[in-house]
Length: 381
Ligand SMILES: Cc1cc2nc3c(=O)[nH]c(=O)nc-3n(C[C@H](O)[C@H](O)[C@H](O)COP(=O)(O)OP(=O)(O)OC[C@H]3O[C@@H](n4cnc5c(N)ncnc54)[C@H](O)[C@@H]3O)c2cc1C
Image (tube, rainbow, N blue to C red; front, side, top):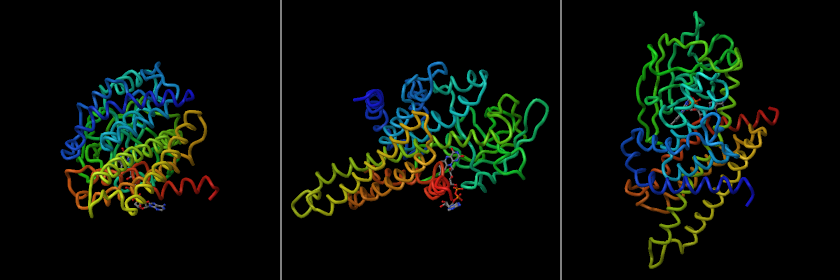
């Protein structure tokens, strides 16, 4: 094994044990309840996993291959519960990455360090009720005032939204100027004028917290603006969101693996016409197709993560990984459900949860079709 494989596989074995012992036994219950699993989240934070992407100087783990390790963290957690994994993914990547990259020492001390130990929870809000794929058309406004900015607007689908202590908010400083006027502002959720509009109920990733957020004259001090001024902020957000696509692909891979493992076991246990259903070639072919899709997802996702570790461009590879893993794992989960027959529709078996959850990676962080647009742009269109 080379250096990369050794570090990543050691890292995986620790996470996998925690997932088997702590997360899987609670996965059904937290999905059913549809509430944010605070205790499990804090426990994972205390173990240091939220810092997997960051150097020791910032309070992180100081891993040599941070992107590959964080990819494996997302994958293994999603093998247990994609809902839980989605909240962790937000905490350990986009919500903290923007502060790590572009926040000053005060923000590092006040938000980044406690977020990496799980004492504070973070979120990232760009999507609005009328602006999703077309992020540049967002309407949340930031107006310059003495010593800072006043933020006004509404955000939707914010992961960790109702439980967050801080939120990186994307707002426009000039609604007429599109993407060029988008900036990042770190909002403390104790700020006057901030409120949770509503917690959103959903059929997929139910244990992840998803919210509508309202900002009414929320004051943000100058040093809470992240980035280098007009145009820089959006570019910064875009970099964090690009990396995030690899982690979303990893979420799909983890849940796809769980669905495949469950279906393989079931195909060997369930008998019809006097033999295990896995003896029927139609069932075998499904399992082989599932395996091929998982292998494809694995290769694309790990390749993009290795490029990120090598500080190489990832725009195309991260988008391709998200398409291949997201769409592929949804198909894997559909096939797993069909192998379970009628039992697949029963809540006492987790395959229905795997299928429900598999829709999230095809939307979160940009839909599969938007990923295709990203790649097409790289081809010169
Ligand atoms: C569970 C969950 C968690 C999320 N967490 C967060 C979060 O933490 N922070 C955050 O900011 N956002 C978050 N999102 C938002 C997510 O990123 C958006 O839902 C996604 O980008 C799509 O935007 P939309 O829902 O407005 O769909 P729309 O943009 O309205 O798209 C609707 C359909 O039109 C298609 N479409 C749109 N434009 C084009 C085009 N140009 N060409 C071809 N097809 C097009 C899309 O592919 C899609 O099929 C989350 C979403 C979900 C479901």
